[in-house]
Image 1 (cartoon, rainbow, N blue to C red):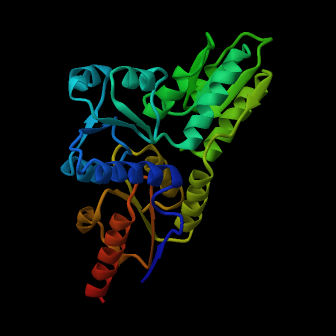
Image 2 (cartoon, rainbow, N blue to C red; image 1 turned 135 degrees about the vertical axis):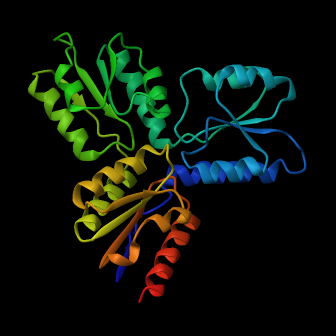
Length: 293
């Protein structure tokens, strides 16, 4: 049996930077005993968040929680997905030390949206409206008409006043082919559009490689956190090419998958999946195969 691990599987630049930042802050605060918080989970991976919590990092989800703990001081680290406009200023006003671990590619979208909304453009954000990255991006728009579009149906229903340019950006982890499809729908409506592909290169590379690997495999395993948007999109891409596609979080989920019954198996992982978990899954698959031959 052939097992192939995707070369691009695992942490992207922004995620690695954010996670490393938290561990560095833990080391720096070891002697000071100052509380360390992240505003929202630092990344969408339950295993990483759990490990950080065991080491003393507390996840705060709201401004109210920040206010409740302000008297104790400490360091607040902004998650990789970024936060809504005004949150960083509020953290500093409350007396915390602010460490911004927002992915630079996400910050670039904040600047684009702020700029073009200030130039009287309609703003369209292609992505998942409930995702924290998208909520953050939307908050930087000053346009009266700012919308989040995630499906073909939503794009077809979109109606904006003509005479104004429509600036289209994307969630960094959105499916590239779907983004192109939605942009085409806007273009056919006759709007003056400015489409900026803000899907990060790591996402595009990972999706392309996963699609190719899925085409050539009898089965695919996608490793990722349950709340990871990019991992779920990888699963969708692989599932379209390979019916036997499975989504797991860790090697503990493998007993439910008949790995050794397939002639070839591909493995990929989302941008928020640590290499340790990927290697554990790979070794567990290899072990299961060896025990059945």
